[in-house]
Amino acid sequence: MGAKGYYKLSVLDSFGKEKEEKSVPYVCNVVTFAGAYDALVADSAAIFDGYYAAIGTGTTEITRSNSSLNAEDPGRTGYDLAYRGGNEVDNLDGTSTITLSRSFSFSLGEKVGTFSEVGVYSSSSGDVFIAGQLIKDEFGSPTTITILSDEQLAITYVIEWTVPNEAQLVGSGTVTDAASNIYNYEVYAQPYFSEYGVGASTDISRYNRYEGDEVGFFGADGVTSLYDSGDVGSGYLNLTTHDGSGVVTFDTGEISLSPTQGSFSGLVYLSFYGKTSNNAERGGVVNTTTNIGFDSEYSRYSLLIKFLDPITKTSSQSFRIRASHTITV
Image (cartoon, rainbow, N blue to C red; front, side):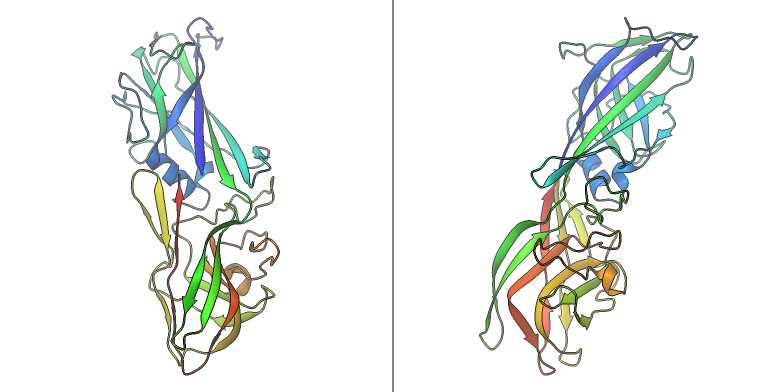
């Protein structure tokens, strides 16, 4: 999942008129590893959360590993939100680009001095450094901006997120049971949004480290529930880690059913990280052509396993499975 961004700085006089000779046109900035993880995975719709802008006096190039501006000047702007509606474009390659623009401003005379860097955070103090960069001129060279006591700084921040809007085949293989029966399977990563139709209003993400304590067990029609998993684990099923360099791993942990925990036959689809107890929210109604859970805010799972050879579990057999997948941000 990709991210890139831009910022623009506008210096206004005491009447609110822009001083074009002091303003900075759109310049590329860096979305940090921690910022991308926080925005894309930390919550169900974190890319749309309110951000806060800050400026500083640091002179070192911002990289994806930065956790803050190099020398932040105390005091941040108020927050600004963003929305999915009207900001999503289908790239026609299985992905969408969400272009989110936020506007910030310091009050008149709030910031006085010479500044050299700008960025946005996820809160008014502390928390996650989402993106930032040195202030640069039209040639891409570091420069500074000087703000007087009768002037005001306005900041426009744009971040573009590229996320999947289709299922993607990300793995395949075989498993063998105790009786030497061989089962072929495929693994499908799901679209980013629960409602994956481009332009949908729901901004809930399937890739959420907080979602999930259910597994959906479905037959070949993608509708018939074969087993009521209930809460299959203590705490959240979706065990998510970030290595700090952009690699995010989702892990189900081991799911184990004893011989007495029911039987089923014709198991074709397993959906992981479903949110609550009814079949719809577990990811029932799989589109068997596209291998995607139904287009609804209640489809919360990000991983689907399809068994090309249907599995049967009898009341004298146990069933264990563990699945994981990784994304880069």
